[in-house]
Image (cartoon, rainbow, N blue to C red; front, side, top):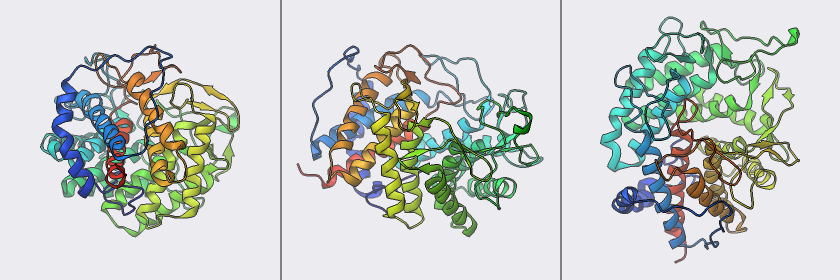
Length: 473
């Protein structure tokens, strides 16, 4: 979500005033830095840097670093390289040195996220606006003219590069994918004021709401046929089918889809103050905060359609991401400072720090049990980036009473900078080992685009600059 339009000074800093001014003063220095050689970090087991106090110079130092990483290792590698000038939309697959790799087709999630990211750059980086406006237009054209099913409506889950239905994706519709196409279209309108983008966003929401909304139990059915009929679970046969590509449980509701429905409907509500959209946003916030999130700060992953939880593991990355999303949505609904939302958001981050945090190396692990040791200790890029964003948000909210979050933020940023970034070819590694050792050199695929890292770095840079503006020297 774009943070500059929301009202809470604590949650989302105003880049239209202090932040944009300060960012603009860094552009020249950062552009030079982006062209400079990157120093090679120390090997595994390196000593952590000393803790820096939360003062103006510290915030400005980190802001310059995060902005440099955004421009060099996110925008600089994905754009314009990913633009498909032949078939439209965006390419998703590249080698470590950013050469085209075997295509996985056009995935709705990837396409919508890339449109959203390009739209954010138009809005939040004035010096890049002219460069990214055509990227937004290209993305919206593809969503409207290729991903959208002209016969039955709704966005396809995925297509081949030429826009044809394939056996891999089937002709089904998944609300996870539809949500991100809606997300991209709404952001595109916010960035360009192009009425066709708003119309596409409205059309997307209406189709999704008509075919997927569960009026009885709340929330949304997730996997639909091409015509828009919800697919029910096949559990009575003893086997639960899963969706193509993502392997989500078919016929059930999920945490993952509903937290992203929350952010896409919030994005739409920013540009279209429709009463039904507001009602769905409030419903989704309540479902995520009060049903999906539970004490002591974890989230169930799957549910029956009646919202009975199905036990599974705890995903630390989704926990910290959701802390941000529920605070953001509450703010947009005019409920900034709501004790119930703030309580759960902090619980989610605190639990992830207590059970999923690597105090030795920095960084959040992938997953574990609610009150047990982490089970998967690899470190995915998106988990680290969402963690970075959430830790600074918690510091902004609670830094006056504790330094826990800012200490963790610094260690998290050090891990990302030294271990998750590819210092040879640029970009951010998908997954590294616990100590940051790289054994998997993937940096681009249909599930890894410019969204998690781009959003986090935009948010963190703006928040650091806002903090700097009011911090002691």
